[in-house]
Image (cartoon, rainbow, N blue to C red):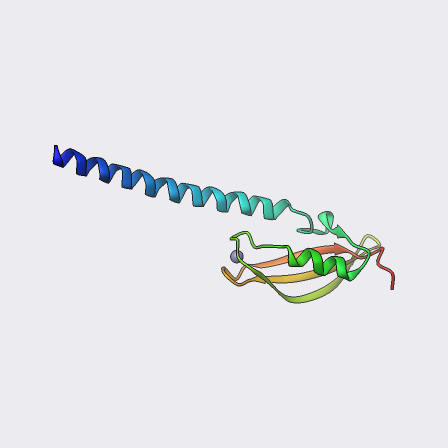
Length: 110
Ligand SMILES: [Zn+2]
C-alpha cells in the first residue's frame, strides 16, 4: 500500500515536470514565431511612423522572444526602393539576442 502511494507520487511528480518543460518550450516557440512575423521585424513589415516619438513609444513596448527586456544599443538609417527606414538595434538583457526593428520614416517631417 505504502509503496504504491510512493510510486504514485513519483509518477505525479514526473508528469508535472514533463508538463512544465513542455509548456515552457511551447511558450518559447510561440514567442519566437511571433517575433519573426511581428511588425517591424523586416523592411517589408516596417512600422510607418510620422514622428520619432512614435518610434520611442513602440520600442518601449517591445520584448525579446525569450521574454526578456530589450535595451536599445544603436540606430541606423537605410534606404530602399525610395523609402527611408530608421532601424533600431536592440539587445536582450536576458539572452543577449540582438533584435532589429524597422520603421518607415518616409513620411516623417524634417
Ligand atoms: Zn532574450
